[in-house]
Amino acid sequence: MKLNSGQRFLYARITILVLLVGAFALGVLGFRGFPFWYGGFVLCFWGALGLLNYGQHSSLWLSYKKPWLFVLLYGALAGTSFLSDTFGLNAHLWFYPFYHGISLLWVWLVLYPFGGLAILELLYFLAGHLDAPLEFRQYPQTQGHRFFDVFESLLFLGMVGVVVLGAIHVPSGLTLPAIFAFVVVWIISALLKLRFHITHLGQYTLVIVLTTLLATLSYGLSGFATRSWICLETTFFDVLLFGFPFWVWVGSFWFVLITLRLWIFLVLHPKVK
Image (cartoon, rainbow, N blue to C red; front, side, top):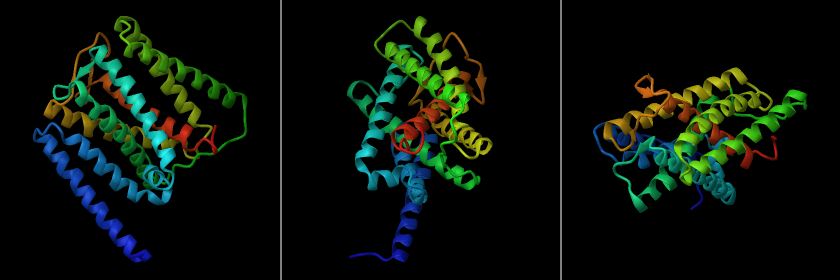
């Protein structure tokens, strides 16, 4: 039976409500100590915000209209998650008490990639409600524009190379300082590069900061409460900021920008360099 526009709107709103209730219930379970809350939480959160953002052609729209491109984006997120998480496990930055061996596939194939997709939907949602829609433009080429296009790309490749080295058990004494330096410089260059591709730089920087804050608190607080993710001390930047080591905040900011970069490069590539 074909639904009319009114019925589609009603059923979509009912689905959004059910998914939001599910995400809230799983979040409460997480704070009460249920260790496997996060997978269902990000799936519900991604679905609810994806439906709200559907008219903006975000990731849920992509999964329905261009499934092959969505699979490519998902594969890139899953691959990035696997390499960066393996790096962190090898460097003893964190570990998962409830996930071992094959069960780590749930972490790499669900928790991180769908966490990234939920972050993308949160970016679209916040941008739309802060009057800074996620619109990318190709401004006229300048020397600064060309420099940051090349510089950011080289930094990105170098950063990926260090992550790969750490993932294949190169000693963390060599890779940890290198990856932190790459990450900090790349974050700065990526934000500067965005200036050449977005309309509302100040508002969108605020959107990225708010997304990082919400993503870190939603995952970190419940992760600490359930001890499903144990953060270990490192030799640098262990100073606490709102209850989390400083390097955790840097890592979260990096993950938000990595997700955004993959979205721009893989999905919006015909529109933006």
